[in-house]
Amino acid sequence: MRQKELSAWLKLIIIICGLFGLLFCLYIGPETGRGILLDSGNRQELYHPFVAFIWITGIPFFTSLVLGWRICSCIGSDQAFTFTNADRLKIVSILSMIEGILYVGALLYLLIVGSYHMNIVVILLLILFFSVVISVFTSMLSHLVRNASEISQDNDLTI
Image (cartoon, rainbow, N blue to C red; front, side, top):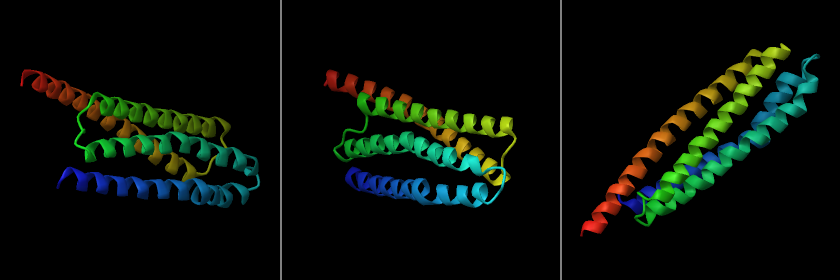
C-alpha cells in the first residue's frame, strides 16, 4: 500500500472515530445517563455532572484525533518519520493518560459516594483500559518514530 493510500485510509478511520465520538458525547452518553440515573430515585442529581464529565472527556479525545489527522497528512506527503510526528504521538499518549486519570477519578468518586450502577462501572473500566492501552502504544510509537527520524537524519547527512 502506498503512503497516500495509507494516509487516506487512516484519515477515513479518524473520521469514523470522530463520528462515533460525537455520537457518544451527544446522544449515547446522555441517553445512557438518562436511562440509568434519572430513572432511579437516589441518583437523579448525578445526571448533569455525568453529562458534563462526558463532554469534558471528549476534549482530549478530539484533540488526539486532530493530532492523528496531522500525522496522517505527514504520512501522505512522505514525512512519516519526523521529530514533529514523534512529538505529536507523545502528546497523544499524554492526552490518553489524562483521559485515564479522569476515568479513575470518576470511578473513585462513584465508589466513595456508593451511588453507582454496575453498567456505569463496567463502561468506565472499559474506557479506562482502552485509554491506558492507547497511551502505552502511542508512547512506544513515539519512541520508535523519534529513533527512525534520528537514523534518517544521520543518513541524510552522510550522503
